Image (cartoon, rainbow, N blue to C red; front, side, top):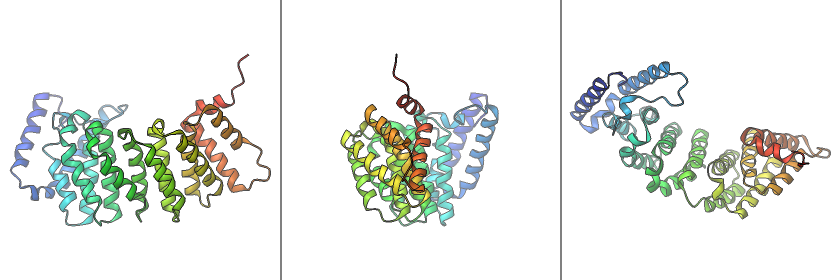
Length: 316
């Protein structure tokens, strides 16, 4: 699958497709360990060939319909694995395979892969399984691009529901995937309003942190689609949480969210916010000072040019 001779590589890909075509669909999950090991080995060899590459692509999986010989191995593992660990391994393996191909090659597989993964997330499975599936879906969003547009409403509903999952890993991955999904969603503003309303009513700290991370992701990936009213609302409500957060996780998530929100404030509003954050801490308790510092630190990481511009001297 990584042979430099294209004819040999294509012949190997074709031969594997013929072999797997002789295996009943319900039996293909048995080959999951072998397929995962082969993909891992191929990825490692590609990585060693070019350690500076931004992506690790397996040439055979980048052929048209590149995942065709092995995609059912993963899907059957996710759908019918005997144990939770088998389903988790299949989802993680699918994620690795999708990472190893291109947008063009993955396009024919978008519908056959995405639909079943969404259905599985709606069932009662352990957090580790759901987390692995969310990871696979996040990569599908990145690689599948516009081909995933028909699934945007379902994915958005699923990800928002997962923000309240008992498992932290599920909440965190759902928040990250929701932000990525917004690159395909033309109507971002209603979601931001819903997230802010949910944030206000969230009693559980873990759920609150996940919602803050979702708000952060939405503004980071699609802030230009948020209306001015919701930008102002987010600035006030998330800013209040920075000052009042009772735990480090919530404070960190609120600080990052406010940093991304600040990008979409007007220049004047952003200057006011930065002045407030930089003001003398006299009369302010330690937790609020820590929160202010965390926001400034997050802004320095995410948009340093805006932070510097706010304190730049006026032109002569």
